Image 1 (tube, helix red, strand yellow):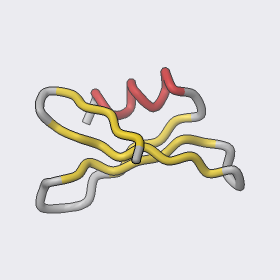
Image 2 (cartoon, one colour):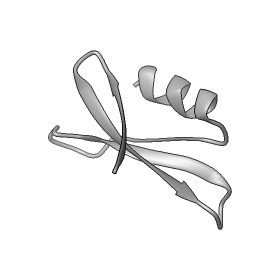
Image 3 (cartoon, rainbow, N blue to C red):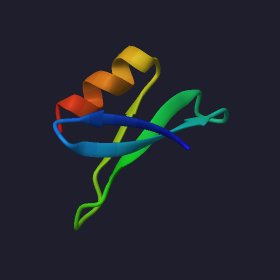
Image 4 (cartoon, one colour):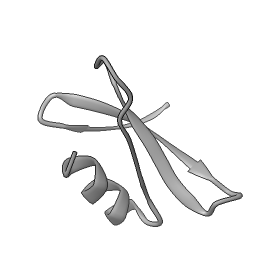
Length: 50
């Protein structure tokens, strides 16, 4: 599993060939928080701005 972390939060990272984008969700919290981007840079920026 690919992951990304920021300020103690862990997010999963996946790639959708159909949508040509990276996407993920923050794990270990109550609720659902998704993030996405078309590049690793965009994905990282979206995750750290949550």
